[in-house]
Length: 111
Image (cartoon, rainbow, N blue to C red; front, side, top):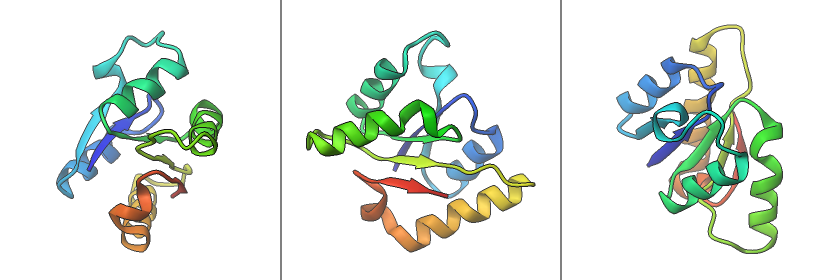
């Protein structure tokens, strides 16, 4: 699976996704930091990449709108901050195991 990681997602999560065999691209490596959320969302959809963010405000409304309009939508994962990166990684792995690839795509998920 392909992921686009928002600025607030720790680099350790990108490395973990890569270790699990996924492609993880950091937003700062793909687009300028001033890129509006709507354009970031469109970029992710054009590249069939799930957005991974720790900030609900950024992409939740855009994802809900895409679902309501039945537009193509790669998916969104909101990573809830934990005390340690290990706990964040464990919650993400639990989500992957529970939802599977088909459960992540075209959905809004919390990890």
